[in-house]
Length: 105
Image 1 (cartoon, rainbow, N blue to C red):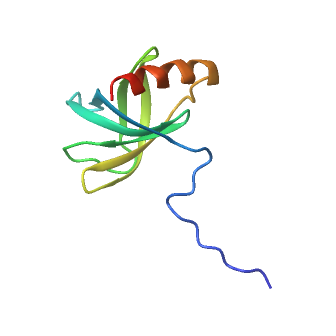
Image 2 (image 1 turned 180 degrees about the vertical axis):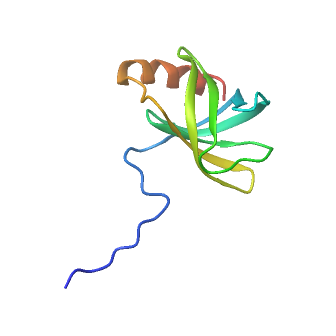
């Protein structure tokens, strides 16, 4: 008999790097908000943000080196949102981007 293993919302494909990086996000309706990214991986991030967010919302985030990147809200709870990038960031670019984010702490 197979055993049941619950899947946690925190199960991620890759580890996240903690950062504190203020940036802008533009929602699909054109509303621009300032957010603070608190952790980041080459495939997604978690941010603190005011406003209404729903699973499936598409947004554009401004990132160092990369510029604009499209992301999808995977979850939103209590002023936090977890997002998956539409396109993963190349490893070499990710390292440089992360260094810039960490300098802003």
